[in-house]
Image (cartoon, rainbow, N blue to C red):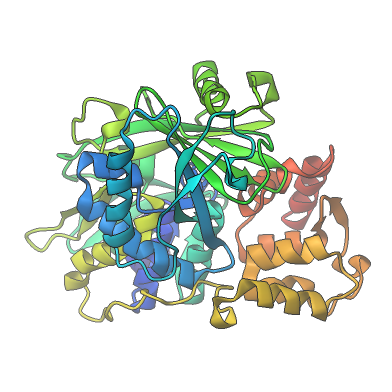
Length: 499
């Protein structure tokens, strides 16, 4: 029997933290195996509000360190991936506000200055009765503050980190689960189970980035310390037909002091969220509850002229946030900061567990994780990810509009909306899908909604897509646009490719 494969790091979890740590570690010269029991970003990391932001509301809980770090990372990530991250203006109406306007403006002053803002515009005050930014709101809206954050295609951010990690030598295995792990001297001996069966691998270090399953992984790792806790909070979102014109978002304040965002989504829709509900029991696939749907619809009715009902919801999604348990009284007050727990004293093979975190700070979290692990690896190189473009993000001057225009000029016979979407999703790697195509026929089967065989092949070959859900709802949001039968056709096509 051949000796088991040996890696420097075995990373468990294919969400944003696991993918980010894999990328950072691989770029430092470490050998990496990442295993994910389902698809990349299949749970929490694809169920976010899709924002790269400092977290304005966290200032109320005195989370100044977290907000400052997130604000610094916000502009850094914008430069690293200008195809999947872009600026977004937020209108914060003072109608129905439980907070005095002076306090909100003070918070926004801190928000503008805490993180060394350079690229995004400063906060300004507008009169919604005279500004087009008030279109769609109920009559009577007057003062509002307008500040800036960024939008992100969250699941694509995960995939691009995994893609970069793979190109730097990491092995990425989806649909592969950690069965057990035990220390044997200076190594971890792990049993992993995937499509080809169960096998044994060895690793000099184990990283537990399993998100909601972080405690489950600790139980599978013999002799692991279990003195940290995770608090599971469900966040849910609804998607409704477009509530207003414009490419700005709204930050809506509720009487219970919670906030809800209304964000332009996929051209024809508005995304509404999020909720904060305690999750009881074991982690798993989350779904929005009728009570959460009612809460979000009521928030919309409080502010917007269009009075939506649950029947108007065209799609919803929910995810479980694995927050560090700081014993806060309410779900919305639980810290979004992260804790990295290293179990590796007395020359034991290290185990690093990740608790909490938010998508905006994933890169810094990964850097901090490697700071804790580097002492165990004499051959590890230094920090490198700050400012390093993600795949497709090497757009000259970060000028997406010029890049998209050049792509359209190169393929004049292809539909403009298709080329814009591909530019947004893949950046400079859109050419790997388009090749020399001058007609739609050259891209192979048309599955509907602009999804072609060439794109599906790319997603399967380069981005670990294995199912129609992977393609339609995580690698893209085309599931909202394709005709009936597309999902079945994509599923059959992918099955034939892997048979």
